[in-house]
Image 1: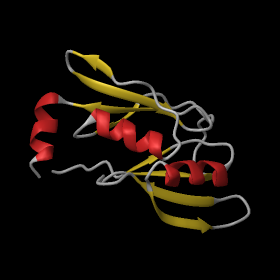
Image 2: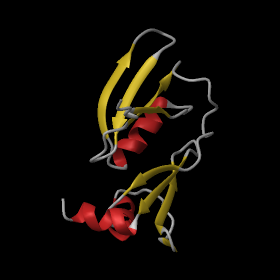
Image 3: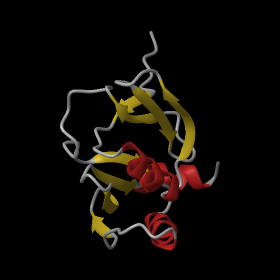
Length: 128
């Protein structure tokens, strides 16, 4: 039986500010629907990802900024960092570790993200 993770809720305080940030970071704005005065659902998908994030109002009981180390795998950490910097996103320098190369950034609420270049996976991803 397949199980596919396709949506992760990311808690934010200001939906419009968070949406602008993620779109500027390169995420595609898939949906933005106000269901009621208490519920707004915004779905955004990182480029090339089969999993999206949901931000909004009335979606989760998590505290804004409480997610730490959401990870996305990239083919090239240096190129990913350069792209985010060009988009005006504040990111860390590339952190070289024996198990991969990482770039870190946070959204306006402090939800933490890591971009990871995995040596074996990334070599295959560049050939796709």
